[in-house]
Image 1 (cartoon, rainbow, N blue to C red):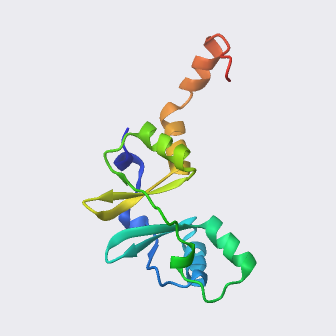
Image 2: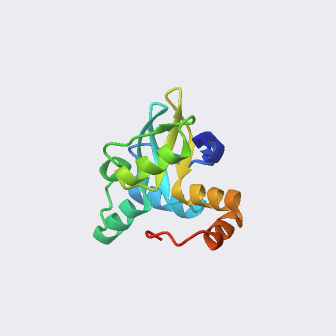
Length: 141
């Protein structure tokens, strides 16, 4: 299974620019019920701002702060052809739950751990329960 089979499309991604006020970012997140905003500069992915960053900002009440001040400094992206388990590894290695998807240098969507797990769960159905019930106990489970 690849990223493009699971990722939310570009039209579902909430975006802003680096000069967007953090308060506006928070309102975008709330209005769209999302946990992140992709920051674009000149139609290219510049970074990502997550709900965690805004929680920190809210506690400090920094009124003049913009997206540039809270966005991830070294954002990484994945291509739509990435395999699902490679994305899991990237998320684990980078301690993130959301990754922008890029095609030809442009934002194509976003892949989120929550969606990946939901898709895997729906694909697996009851098969997992049957396998576990009929297999000897695994030492790591």
